[in-house]
Length: 346
Image (cartoon, rainbow, N blue to C red; front, side):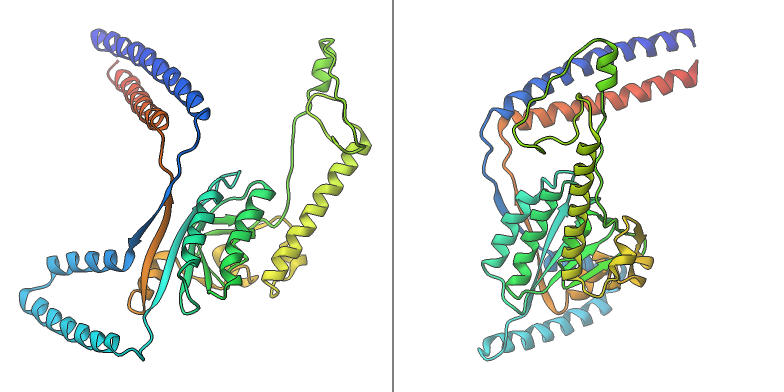
């Protein structure tokens, strides 16, 4: 047992050194990649209708007997021939298309760069009988970032194409700013929505600096160029201006949401509170309780479904950085497991 414990500690030390080296290399690679020009990306399209059909066929082939399968295939071929005859008839309208886009937002709404490319690609061919579904997941972030993301979604509505937002987990604050643009919002029963409010916070180290006799100077041109600072001494006048700006931003947020969802009682829902899906439906923050999967599978028979993604091409330093980080994460996990193993046998 003593040998096992010592061996475990030895492995832990080795892993610690290796992880430290890998993190150092990853940091160097990341810093180097910042100085490189970003590599252009490209649009990728996945046929989800085909995907759902293949999944259904795989399961059907596994659970149904041969006679039942033969009868189903015969019926499907009959339907395909009928559909082909309709397609050959030029007077028959084409099937509608449902374009699916994913948006997983961080605090800076950095995915807006991909969103703008995806929306541009879709609008280049989409028509009024088509639809765009955005699977949205975001807890909010900076005002200007999510304001731009909402404006990108507005392009879909401006072109007269139905826009649906699906919230499976969370669309709060800036996330709901995006969601409210939709013609229809669907949400899972326990998805989080709302948080129509504005928050700002920062530390102030002035007293700490003063205690250690450290001076900090801040020079500005313009009365309100800086209102609150991290290192300087904040004034009541600066605080008042900061709060006024915060309230003005909140008012703009409320007006934006009200314009897109006039059914909302803004006095009731613009308090910064959040609601789970079922409660959100009661206060009209969402239109239906439904997951994105449920919505898509219901659309398979009436529309061709395509998942549109803008993929960024990663430069070599970025690829190396990801590889190093992945290796570091694995080694760290093994290290923790080793410590747990050693503790178990000691």
